[in-house]
Length: 336
Image (cartoon, rainbow, N blue to C red; front, side):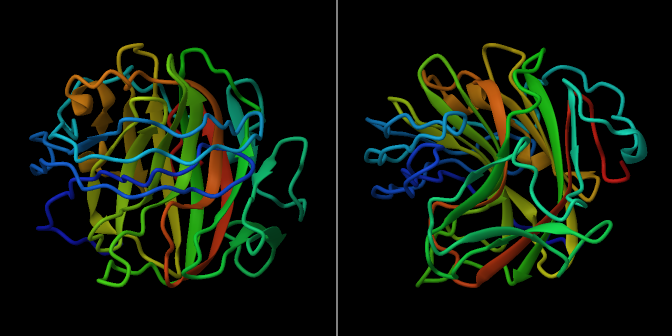
């Protein structure tokens, strides 16, 4: 996958004030300024953003919609925690796909039934113009894959969500998907300066309210970069996360895996791999990034979502295929 080295990880303050993770309603609210900071990976300095008030508490688990977020103020420099405190030592890899059976700690779906199993999945598609189907236009393995379709340059949410494995003990999980973006992942321009979107998200509640965290497309001044981010929606609202050096490549299958670790009740730790290569600049530690902000404790993970959550419109992305999804208590990798 093409790499763009020499780019400093962006100081990421999504500042999107989206509605909560819910079954109805699109994100809303005004945008705020980016936080200060932005040291190279490994040396800390990821920006953070706090707000005076959060949106209504929606829930992906219950399917209720969230309210609009409050106003956002510029945040102070936190840390991207590439050298931060580690979570639990990763366990041995999960079993190969041929032996993967959905259990309390393992979830597998290759969509070869040709349709979504609605006993395992729930749809989060408040955008009437979006669609979620299973088709054979692109498939990573086998014949079928999930096809998420949205209208370009129109803010949309279209995700599939599962809670089959949750809650997990300890409070941590790995999630992996193969994903194909089409026709293009754009770079930010003057007309579209912020295209922050989420593609693979963990959902849950901490001591204050709803938390949404995972990997997506970077926001302000993005050059097609991955974003590792968390949004703590309750008051005081807090969101943070660094951008990658590497670019998201369209029109080919990519293997994306996240580790969300809330086993330490004092902080949320995240790691991200693309095509089995860890992106160390995307490792985050919510306690370090918060810089004293109180709403940063890890949620009790309750579900995982795959698809598109556009906090701001993406002008050229219309289609996304998702295949060979896995969730596990162990490191998964791309070969499994």
